[in-house]
Amino acid sequence: MLFKEGSHETPRSHALGLLAFAGSGASQTAWTTPTTAEVDAVYPDIEALYIDLHQNPELAFQEVQTAAKLAALARSFGYEVTTGVGRTGIVAVMRNGRGPTAMLRTELDALPVEEKTGLPFASKVVVKSADGESTAVMHACGHDVHMSAWVGSARLMAEHRDRWHGTLVLVGQPAEESGSGASAMLKDGLFTRFPRPDFALSLHDDDTMPAGTIGYHPGPFRAMSDGVTIVVHGRGGHAAMPMNTVDPIVLAARIVLALQTIVSRENNPTDPVVITVGSIHGVQGNVIPDEVQMQLSVRTYTPEVRKKTLAAIRRVARGEAISAGAPREPDVITGGNATASSVVYNDPALTMRLAKALKANLGEKTVVEMPAKMTSEDFAEYWTIGKVPSALLHIAQ
Image (cartoon, rainbow, N blue to C red; front, side, top):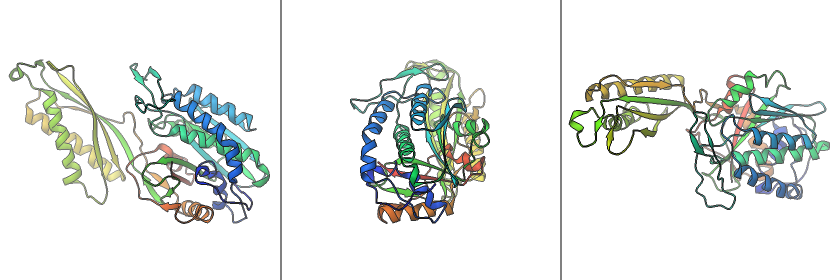
């Protein structure tokens, strides 16, 4: 993707102009980014879209209205649009002569979180989740920002086709939060039914840097993630007569504490691990239940550490159950929701070419190398499965 020579951007146009920078990674020809005036011209519409998306979030693989909005806008800009890719995903293609094929991906889904921001456009959406439970929904991970930037980039590229050549593939991916959307689109022919990209780009909002800063990191950047469920079995009874029970709540608490010794005493600290217990479910305050369900999030960077950590979780849970005299061993179930089986690998050559171009246009202080993170992203699959060189950038909003 190529832009000809032009002027600098303002900080708020960083995300909207990301594709303009992509061309520098594929060619040494002169190129330009959108001007401040051009970004300002589209910004009111993009801000209105952001507010609408934020007010109307949808969960993984339920993003029907979200996908329809983005598809309609892409069509209005002149893209060839296909919907229903990977269930609820969309692909928008613009061919503009010979040149590289660039892919820009955004996520569509939101989280089962109740919004408490107090904003006038706060989400009040409550839906049924995949397991049939009622849940509030919120764009708590910034996907509304990502989609808005995606649409802004799509519009700017379409309006200024005289400045670039090549093929642009815009991907609206479902179910990033569950870690299954990228693989669903690849299985549905993303790289065979549509132009295969020379490189894939994505962005993520960030709150660890000053606003307006772009962060990059060549090589391994975001961790693998495993969802783990532990079902702890006890012998229930009345809360006033614990001596007649084997309390799975107390046992679960012991497991929570013991799990942290895997991180602090069994793992090499130079190859990080995170084990977080995010929920423990019993019955009610005056009942000692027969069983307790614990849900964990496990983050690792290498297959060896991942295998060792999951085995240690099973061992710790079993050992604590034996120590407590539990009637049976805990069930340890892996491969559940929010599992990302691959590390995000930013192609070093592509990442450094992007960083060089960004610095040339925005300045050295605005574009900085950032450390790797323990958070996860299924954007990893476009390289791991699809073998397309990829780069995920972070943009502080």
